[in-house]
Length: 195
Image (cartoon, rainbow, N blue to C red; front, side, top):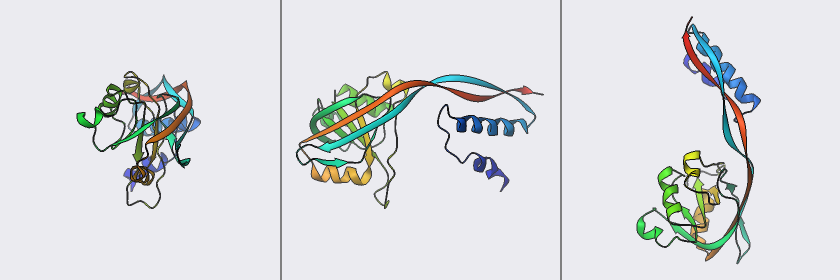
């Protein structure tokens, strides 16, 4: 169907500042111009997480978990008591200070603000569905609004690994996040006026 043609043309990975992103911009520009609209390309700079690596383990047993590091967040190694919080409610958060906390849900402004205010040492999020046979671990990063709240090391794991971690309920866990930050230039197609 014609209405899906543009989506098919854009069905490739296009990381910020990459040649693929410029290619996607050209596709979008060409599409807009078919409606007899003049297009101007504007560039802007965006902060970008580079080479983010992470590890997560239970020191007592040396059991490791596959994780990705949360980019644009805190870096370093943290070993601390583990706490699973089903919901980020005030009673649970009162026990979170200085601990590495696993919590449900993604990294939203509200959830991140709560863990920052609770003074956690580190955090763990997860993605996927419990019915999935296999889950690719998402690469997440903190947007500028969240970075402004403060930076603490965090990792993401699959839901299956998170369930395993909760069942094990270790006293202490250790996470390490390393990465760099850089700036990249990104193009943006803007419609101007009709020809």
